[in-house]
Image (cartoon, rainbow, N blue to C red; front, side):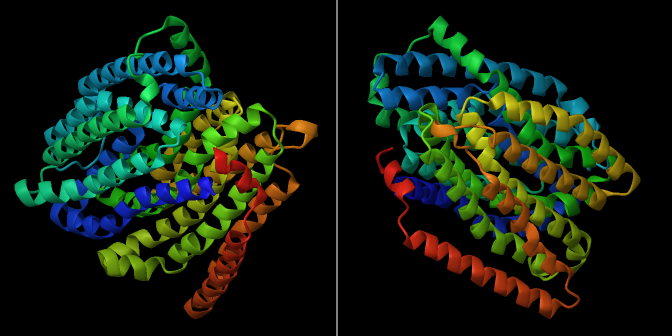
Length: 485
């Protein structure tokens, strides 16, 4: 089952750095102090978000190349790839200049900074990394279209380890200097881009001697990427920008109680990320043919994610205080446990939403997701600002949760309107029932005693594990169909 195998490869590449994070975050928190560590969480968010600031070109390139590989249209592969990389390099350069110019004003917006110049210098290093980060997004999109997930995840593993090991090494070498840490992270982006170039040259021989700019390819990529741009920017923006907005209203020391549990929970993105990276090119080919098997694949993906994520996210919420106390100390756990509980539920819901989100983009309906995000954005920002300013960071976490729940429902409704051959919907009423019933496991948090909550978590875990194992043992006809992809 190639989709399962590729998803597992993605899971390893994305998940291994999480183990290192469990060691690195306490070390960095202790060495940097709460305020500087709060700024570092913002830098990590920038590193993650920059890869999406590509005008949608990388995603559009993956979509077009997946179709070209499927149809053996080798003459289009070089011009599409070369044109996309030129566009991404130009966008990255312009964005980098903009961030470098605005580094000091942006840093000045944050409250309670230990050193304004140090924070601005950190943003300057991130500005230098922007062009290679966007080029890396395009190169990775080419490898995804080719199905080269072994290469992708080998590089991703190294870059993920660098994200945490690099700052620890910089802390040991030069002390609590955020600019030095940002420089190390920027160097990691450069090395990652170089590794992607080597991989592309190896696995896509159709590119040799065919790299070139082509005007019609540029127009096609820009046309297809318009709504992909909006969708790819706004969705992650609302997932990451909250910590920047909260940082405008609370001291950066208090921001750590919000951003640290969020950073921990967001690492669970490895599960939907591992799956949807493989689903996107596969669904693009199948939905283009209106193949009803695409609907079965989407339903199985939703169910598999729910069964895999519910025990993990419910466990984080159930044992929030003891986990944080062992990891970062009792006083930190007192301030952060509420946010960890809220973010755990939100992460479960937003992970399920990635299946209809990917399906809409695969079907060429990125405009639908983008318009939903455009409608959500002003309401979310206003509500977040009010909550952070009037109540505090815990209220802001609840606003974030409400936004992801609304977003998930709207995405499933929109994707259910996509029809395949014979009029079969891509998502039926069963998918909506799953979305409604799956979070019910979190009702166990309302039980009156820790022992009852722990027992409920164990029961949920055993049921999910049994259902997941049963599904893996039954080789799906849908997956058999996709073995050749």
